[in-house]
Amino acid sequence: MRSISLLYVLLLLSSATLASSIGPAPELSAPYCNGSISQFVPAVVGTGGGLVNVTLQLVPSTDGNGNVYAGVYPTLGVDTQDSIDQAVTYAFAASDKELSCNALISFSSRDGDTGYIDGPSAGAAFTVMTYALLNNQTLRNDTIITGTIEDGGDIGAVGGLYEKADTAAKGGAKYFIAPAEGFYEMLILKNVEKMDNITVLQASSVKDVIGFMLDNISIDQTKELPENRTAPDIPSYDSSSIESFIPVASGMVTLENETLATINGTGNDSNAVRDFYTSETARQAKILEMGYLFTSANEAFLNYIDLSTIKAILANDSNVSSKRGELGACLDSISRPVMTDENFQWVIGADLRQAWAYDKMGRDQNESGMLEDDRYAAINDMSYGIAWCDVAKSLLAAAPQGGAPIDESAWKSFAAQEIDDAKSLPLQKPDSLARLDIAQNSYNNGRYGAAVYDAIYAMNNEENPPTDEEEAKAQVEELLGENMTSLWGQIYMSHAAFLFEDNDSASAWPVARFAKELDDANKQMIEITANSTAAQATAAAPISPPGQEYLLLAEGFAALSIFLLVVAVILLIRTKRRADGNERTGRDYRAKQKKG
Image 1 (cartoon, rainbow, N blue to C red):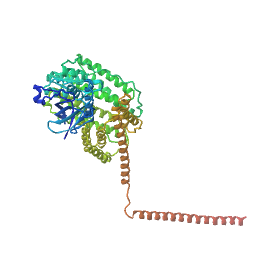
Image 2 (image 1 turned 180 degrees about the vertical axis):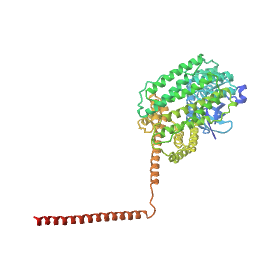
Image 3 (image 1 turned 90 degrees about the horizontal axis):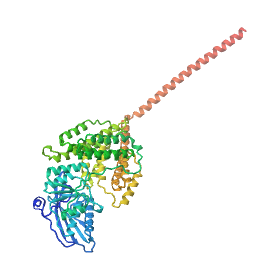
Image 4 (image 1 turned 60 degrees about the horizontal axis):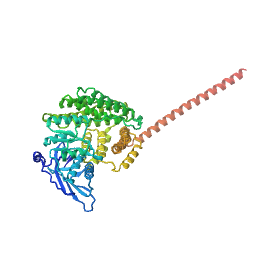
């Protein structure tokens, strides 16, 4: 059973052009609290595309209180459930109707292999579907929608825009509605427009989408560029305990700046890219100065990847092989030092990023069969790998020198247990499953520390923060108050502190938990190493053969006897000499007396 990540709802209703390839036209029913819409939804199944049939039905509630019900199969992720509930609630409010109907949602796969659906990006589409049913209106049949539904009816950002737009175009859609995104996504979508003959419409409000879908009202297409960001006005962070990480963070910001300097061209797109990312590098430099080292490095890391892809798009350079070769050369240049009790956390950090980079490079990508846009998506993957490789090298360069060598194989059983614990869970998120696979590969390659860290991530990634915002905030505050003793526990906790201070407790919660779990694992690894070293020292001590202790005791007595005998002889000789001397002295004295 494969895991499916829900991307967006495909609303191609009663379309002669699209019905044959997408599915049947939806059935609309006019009365309030009565009617249904069924339509196929494009989704990511494994590494390819798939279609999931979505049915939204409104039925009268027996008690007058409306509820949203989702079928028990396939399993729905929390994000999907929340987005459906929020979409239906908003649609009722926008229709000036009380939520007195029950909304029944069901999903089924065309191929019958749907096991899990997750992601909030269908929110805007669910809102439009519900609104159409409530108001007995017909949706236009040539448009695909993606975007979350947020408070106030805003359409929020989503991932995978290229895949969504490409699937929409291949399905025969004329329009693709998406939220305003960053430069990389904007440029990719421009290429989709140019090559696939589809019009991308950016929308910030679901009301605009409803007007377009129901009443054919144009959406204002004054392209909004991403807003420049400044460093938030939050307290500085005491990073003195991890100041050795400063070269890694500043190096990432430098790499971002160097890549920005290579963006050529004088067109509007090039100028806008330079202006935006110049502002970004200033923000990251300020965040670094404030002590949030990982936050600064992470933002610069993500910007470097986008800039690398943007550079390729602007230069019309879609040579995936060249980028893959660049990644391979970087990985080949890494020289792993001997792991010691001083540098092992740095080495593990580098091992992790090497493993992630190898995973990117090892993905099956048949360049000869790629469309132009597929090539840019692959270049984006390779850029991730190169960035991870650069960070791995920076970590090894910053690692402390010296220390006693340690045997990493002592962690083998611990790593195996962590991997087994992760496998015992019903992991459902694609990122969790991917990291567990990488953990297994690290284990197979003898990188047991990296295997432990990735297995912990896979398990932690499945946890969701408390739905109550105050409870999430309280838990993060408690975690921030704990004393982290490990390098990565301290580093990730500093990022959790940034998110918390920036009023994003929901995002800070999993980061703080991950930091705590890494810190606990690190303590166990140190204890395992100490026990292993003590056991090896005991095993290396010489062991006397049976009866050897008695022989040694006899030899000791013999040596003592000889020593005492020698002492006795010496004393006897000295006594005799003294006696002889006294006798001579007496004779001499008596002789003198006689002479006198």
